[in-house]
Length: 129
Image (cartoon, rainbow, N blue to C red):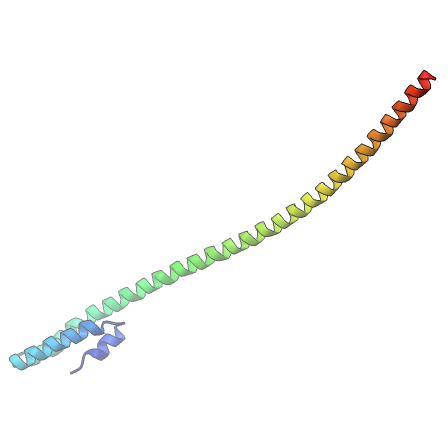
């Protein structure tokens, strides 16, 4: 009797089953009553393997849930980053516009200052004449 196929369906318990199988064979050779114990041991072993398989499925399910949660969080972060990039681009564009407007106003201010100083100069010269 080979127990390996049970281990494969139980989700990777092959090593445990090989040890149990070798122990059963040793008892079968040493003791003739162990032959009757093989089916009983297999019956007792099946629920344990089933439970282990279920635990592995639950842990896989938990891992999958965690991965889905992380995937959702990552998607949210990507959306946030894209929104921040767009906002940053708009703010930089607005800053460039305001900087250009400020430079134009400074230039006009200097022109007006020069004109006012010229008028003051002419008024002083007219006053002295």
